[in-house]
Structure formats: C-alpha cells, structure tokens
Image 1 (cartoon, one colour):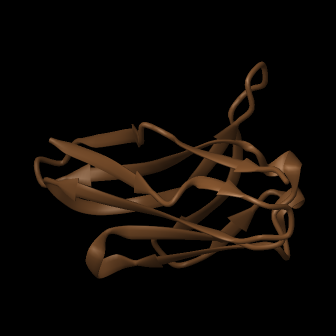
Image 2: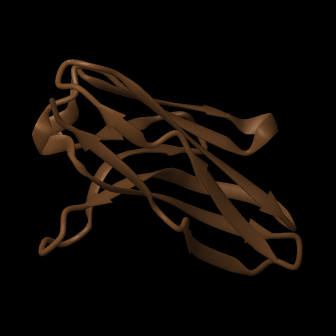
Image 3: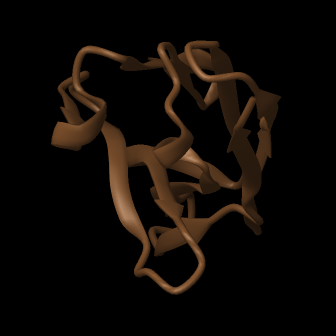
Length: 120
C-alpha cells in the first residue's frame, strides 16, 4: 500500500504566497517522478510542475519564475512554493507520483487534492 498526503492549500490575496507539501508513504522502493497538477472546474487537469528522481524540474509556462518545486528524497516529500499568486492560479491542486514498491509494482498515484484560492 502506498499513498500521498497533501497539505498547504488555502485562501490568499493576489501577490501572496503559499507552500504545498506532499508526502508519499507506504511500501516504497523508488519514486520516479513526483509533482503537482491543478484543475479548474470545467477544465482538464494540467501539469503545474514536477521533479524527476534525478532532480530535474519541469514547469508549466504559466508558473515559471513564480513557482518553485523542490524535494526531499529522504522524506519522500515534494514541495511547491507558490509566489506572486494570481487569481488565475485558483484551482484544486493534486499531488502526483510514480512509485515503485518493494514488490516491484509501479503505481501512478494521485492525492485527494487541496484547494488554492487567490482572491482579494
């Protein structure tokens, strides 16, 4: 059994900051990719940022220069620091991880989602 637990969403004014955290737990042998997606009602889920096991980050164009993804391999945790938030960043943010268990099964896991609302 493996699972993801997210935290850190909330309400913030435009220009403000939030930090999201996601912890993977369970029977983990390796994590290939870990990152964040978001979905606005009526739209498809889109990649915000992810981090490979080698440490290479990928960002959506809309968040480059404002968001920073980082990870702690020892804690199986990924963070998303979101600065200069805009109303259009309002969405449900989902953690995603591609995990290899000790029994050598791969799982494409999703967290339950955390709401981020940017509004004055």
